[in-house]
Length: 157
Image (cartoon, rainbow, N blue to C red; front, side):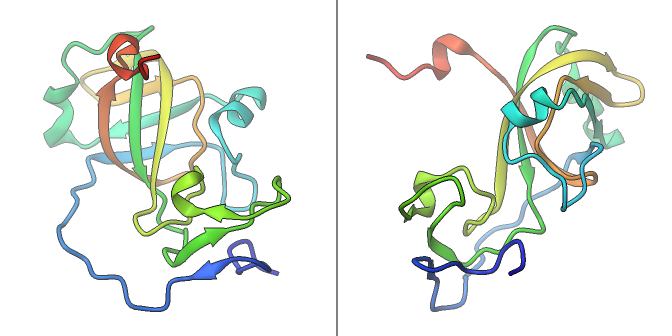
């Protein structure tokens, strides 16, 4: 069984995906991970102790102004190797299946990954941000960088 082959209880999309807009990749993620050994989430990546680097394309480097070591950032990245046609999934760590939108799996209509990372260092000139960990394979396209704002990002009681 391949990494992304449908398992018993999973539901595949039965129609073509319609694309509406375009996305600009602002850089790439450099990690030690390949498709075969990539952690399933940031917790696992941190446990394996593997810092990573974000490479921001030259034209977008002025947008890094204000980011400093110690900051928490939200990275959005394109998990380009993931299939886009599973509506219901049965993860290996669960006994029951659930809808794709109830999972953090990269297998989804738009394979966008999200990670809250800590900035270890930043070089504005080269556009390189050293981060504590990432759950993305080496070369993963970067979609966006946003500041993590705990007060704004917390769900109210």
